[in-house]
Length: 214
Image (cartoon, rainbow, N blue to C red; front, side):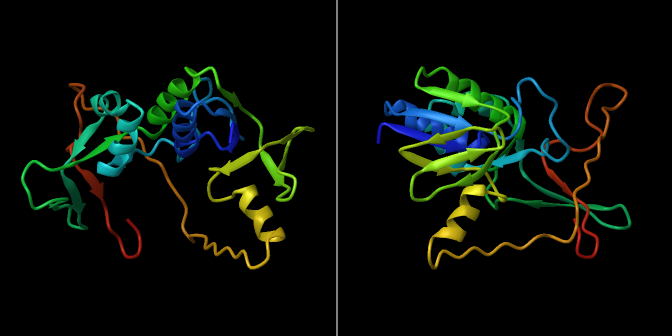
């Protein structure tokens, strides 16, 4: 395996590219969206990630753990806001001093893309949406009138993966189960306090549980 095509330049695809590049493998990454470093983040994409031991270990393998942890905010637990306005902290761990790390999804993605691009054997192709895949020939089709034939294709293109759909159509007994949530996503912006600080406790995950929603 000397050349790999990765579909999707999100967190998984970008990190995978670094792992492969360090092994001397040529990597071509195709991403449906534009370059995150040059475009505004779409709604819903700004939600932070909780980075724990497994994620830190993956970043450590490519030498990026210290860089990302320096940008992280420690979270010690969940802060529950009830209907009356009272709050209750539910710690993530019973051991004092343990926490998980809140990091920017976009910030981490940008950092991984930047790191991957340092390798001469990695190339990114943005605004190239994968629309179909031939499981026999390995040819990948994109929204632009072009195709790309690869020795090995790895799909990291998320819930609406065109690669997975193609495999379901063409591979016998390949089954996919997909369930869509009934509710949507709403992003709220809480501005800083007058003194520039946080209006809510910053070292916790805030949750407002109401019926079936949080």
